[in-house]
Length: 168
Ligand code: FES
Ligand code: FES
Image 1 (tube, rainbow, N blue to C red):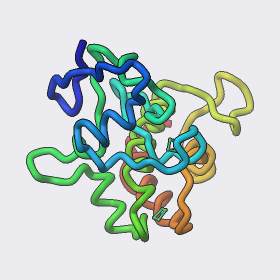
Image 2 (cartoon, helix red, strand yellow):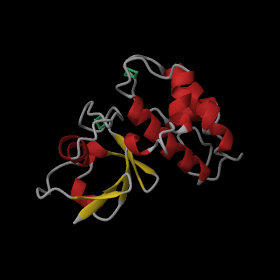
Image 3 (tube, rainbow, N blue to C red):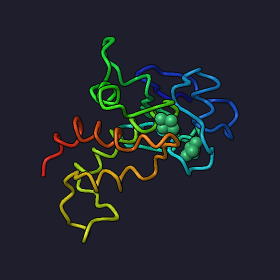
């Protein structure tokens, strides 16, 4: 049984009770993914599984046998930051940085959801326009908390990079 983390096959834990978050951090030493609440309330542990954002603290690692997991460490390519990572720097999207890996993974997954036409709480109906306006981004990112209150910079970074690529 194995998972594919950032493109590399790694063994799943022998203990089926181990969360994906703990497996990433404690066994694989991928400490970019953060543990905040450990109960699904803060978004700090967000990673991508085949492009979909999940809370790794609420997931068992063995559930992801054979699946592609991407953590913040897997976003940079050939030593270059992912455009959203660079935008967080440019737009002051963080202070302490603790929430940042989760924010970035969540934003990438969020943009894919909008592109697929997945409605949000703000949508008038299930077929509503999913253009990523500032209000839509705020709503769709509301599961990712930032104790430093860097929200304006976070939304600016997302608007500058991801939102323009989502067709209206
Ligand atoms: S650590 Fe997973 S949601 Fe807070
Ligand atoms: S930058 Fe400190 S919690 Fe978000």
